Amino acid sequence: MGKSNVSNKSVISRLGGQKFIVLLVVIGLIIFFSAISPDFRKYTTFMSILDYSYYIALMAIGVTFPLITGGVDLSIGTGLICYSLTGGYLIVQKGWPVGAGMAVALLLSIAIGLLNGVLVAIMNLPPFLATLCTCMITRGLGSIFSKGFGISWPTSGAPGSWFRNIFKITVNGTKIPLGFLWVVLLVVLMAFVLNHTKIGRYTIAIGSNKEATILSGINVKFYHIMAYVISGFFAGLAAIAYSAVFSTVQPGTGAGFELEAIGGAIIGGVSASGGVGSVEGSLIGVFVICLLKTGLPYIGLQANWQQIITGLVLIGAVLIDIMKKKKEQA
Image 1 (cartoon, rainbow, N blue to C red):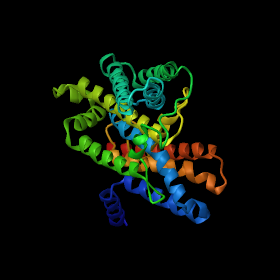
Image 2 (tube, helix red, strand yellow):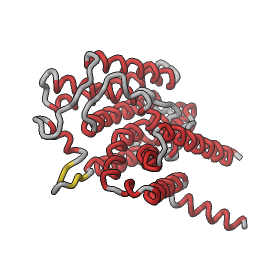
Image 3 (cartoon, rainbow, N blue to C red):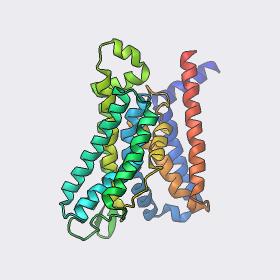
Image 4 (cartoon, rainbow, N blue to C red):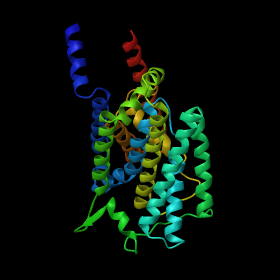
């Protein structure tokens, strides 16, 4: 019996541990919703799931890095809306080229990420408090830049609407989700960064044992800041994805987006206490959230149930993380 348990455990570990389990959950959810609702099996539903997943997945890729350091970034949700409103205002109201508006959105996101990093790594503010402050700042900035009005980036067919084709194109009347390809490529790239570069290795080291990392002579402050810069940059990419998929961006929104990204990362195996996690796991976790968001209405449950069920799943993921930590310490 003991050998069987060891064997089963090693098989699951070789297949990716928690990532493999969450992948099975994703497959199970698809089968469950498809079996109950024929409408869920439609191609339009598949496209809807992907549309919702792009901006959440991009935020989750970025926020994986602060989470692994043992911190958090609460500014990415309202930041996404702020960057989108700023870029959209310059494009629509000031006549800037779309590429220039996108560049400004990304530069602003990097600046906010840098500010978060300085507050946490240099000024030693608790990550929760520091990023909560920038969350409120970006929420206000977005409303100021847009003058309190919703902003619509160039719609399909209008001059400058080429950016929408980055995420979705139509071929012979069929919509092709190019955005999924870009998200997968970014996951592969950032997984390489996390596992095979100094930035990634030192990010993990900071979360595992910050004091030991400092004593080893590593410039901890620099790499700690870089984790938040990466998070900010991907919030900027998420802003572009959000603007490309949805018709209008409204000021004062975005609060709660960060919870879906952080929740997806933790469900995907990022440790709530830092030091452990993967970019690919975060992506898989995001799909659990997106499937619940899209699938529950098809079985007659209101959207509010998605938040309740996601919360329960998140509690389960955190409890699994705690039990794993206790076993490692035993």
